[in-house]
Amino acid sequence: MGLFSRKSSKTPTDADSVTSKASRTTSNLQSPLSTKTMNGSSVAIPPPPTINVPLPPPPDPRHDPAAYLRSIYAVRDRSSIIHQKAKRNQLNHFDVDPTKFEETAAYLVSIIKIDARERTRRLLDLFLVSVLLDAGAGTQWSYKSKESGKTYRRSEGLAVASLEMFKAGYFSGDPTEPYQVNASGLNRLSPGQLAIGLQVSDVNPIAGLEGRTGLLSRLAEALEKPEYFGSTSRPGNILDYLLSHPSTQMSSDPIVLIPTLWDVLTHCLASIWPDSRTKIDGVSLGDAWPCSSMPSPPHAQPWESIVPFHKLTQWLCYSLMAPMTRLLKIQFAGVELLTGLPEYRNGGLLIDTGLVTLKPADAKRGVGAYHHNATVKGQPCMEVVPLFSADDDVVVEWRALTIGFLDDLLVEVNHLLKLEGSNKLSLAQMLEAGSWKGGRELAEVSRPNTKQPPIMILSDGTVF
Image 1 (cartoon, rainbow, N blue to C red):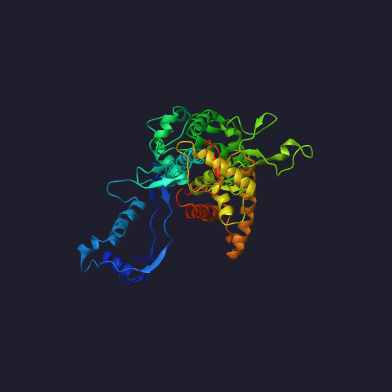
Image 2: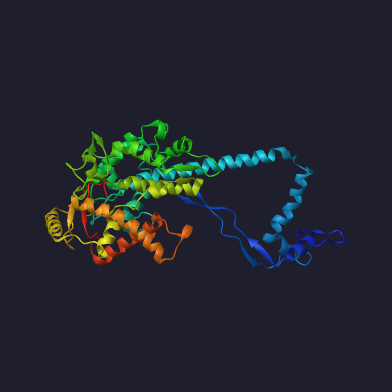
């Protein structure tokens, strides 16, 4: 008898039960948890919201039993008869031990958690390598996807390329486990192999190929820290380190501190940056540079003249948080400490909208550098823009002002959208949906042939 059926004075038959269920005019349509394949593993897709709509009634078995038994309505209805007998241990062929029910459910929970953790580790593997590869590719390079056949440039191209290389096992030292990154896999990567994976050739050059290869080679060495990356030397094993860290608050939804994640990345990855970077007391600072607009000796200490950006480390934080939050419901405290990314899309937006303008003397110097660089084979020679090296004072100042203006723009954008409280856009949301996309679109409109930013950076494959 249906749950909402009226009591009857007669004993109901199976057909009566079906008829009473059919008397309902609406039903909940809610799909079970489905999956899709990402990076070689199944990722759970949350069910759509419950939808209340009228459904047609099931066929009446008293009039058309064949139609009823062929319908979806009949499957659970008829099986429920045996299910109820099973609960009473009245089956013909099986004995049922109800004390094992909770144990069975607990086993499923353990499997789900293990599976979710491994999926998260794989995504952390992928995202770390993808971010490190995503320094400026230059204007000449493009990547044609082996899966879709589409051609991508710049960051989009590097993202697609790193995904397809990951799936092909480029970064794994274990041929039976291609969907991972480990030290042994990175150690065997040569510039030639990386060039093949990125489709680099004389007619499709990429900026900083040697620099990227060196970065991955040094990453392999950095991964040989079992306390952070486990015995298998995988980036994804930082998940286990974070969950077991004393500062992590373990509850139904674990809470990880951003400073804890940051310390892991900066400490473990400090050795991967080139020795030529800025140093204080012999310690390499990574993506940090002196700037003439900052206080300087003799009126300030030497460290006060340096502007830290740590763009790739920040990008790693943003990227690595995503799978941990989505798959494992891990929350991060201190996200507001992260800044807008000081890179050419966000910075280019400020120039292409006219908010900031390069001063004439610097523009002239940069254009001269562009023309000189254009004499090098494979370098762009149209749609002239100023060009500087990553450590040039112009670039350092540009990146610093980009961070500040992105903070200001977030406040104004939320004001214009009339968003308040918990409805406000976060900085990460504005970056993804607004400034980065806007900077790219303005570059495409302003310089349609090269789609390059309004200021070009000489890239070594490890910055910007």
